[in-house]
Image 1 (cartoon, rainbow, N blue to C red):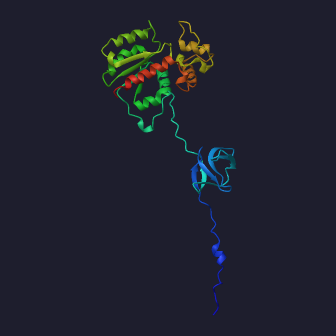
Image 2 (cartoon, rainbow, N blue to C red):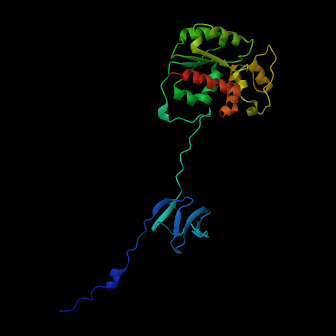
Image 3 (cartoon, rainbow, N blue to C red):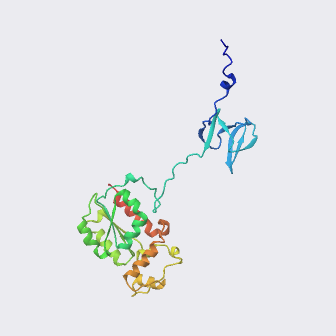
Length: 278
């Protein structure tokens, strides 16, 4: 019989098992107390930039270490990660905070009426998100002359309000006379008519967005849009040219800041008016 007490290598059984160190992910923020594994220097995070971490100990001594070194937090190996940032609330083109998608509503009975296609396109471009959240539909009048007929068909009432945006709503204008007559009529309590002083919605875009200090003055007797196209050196022979000009102008509008306050305030007023009670 042989003594087999020394058949196995006792030293081999004492070798540590090697493997990757499991490191806990910790957000690297200012003030976090960290220990440098190699030097055992312990301090609060001052900053971390260009791959270097600076720590300040209790006595105010500051030392720098490569971020690639090993560190401990509360005695545990850690891996630094960027701190999570709070989500940034996005703003719509109108300047309001964007609402969660699920807040969008179906169309409400109340409406906003605008004079023409260009007005509707600009309102949708800047205030579309707000209108969808409130469930407000924008409809066309095809001119202020049709307003009384449109309202008679719409039949405004409590919970069914009508907001109207008119061009050139200034003292003595045709639009002002129409608005005054409707305000005195049977639907006046549930209709709000507001407007801007500009001949056309084009002029509500700040001229600086098109490289001008002011919109050109068009003589009486010349179609205003045609005159603008000619003054700017753009084609002006037919409706297609006018449509192209408007798309060129509208493309320069990024948000409400690119519009004159006289328009922005009136649209906000209409949205508030038709939203009441919905």
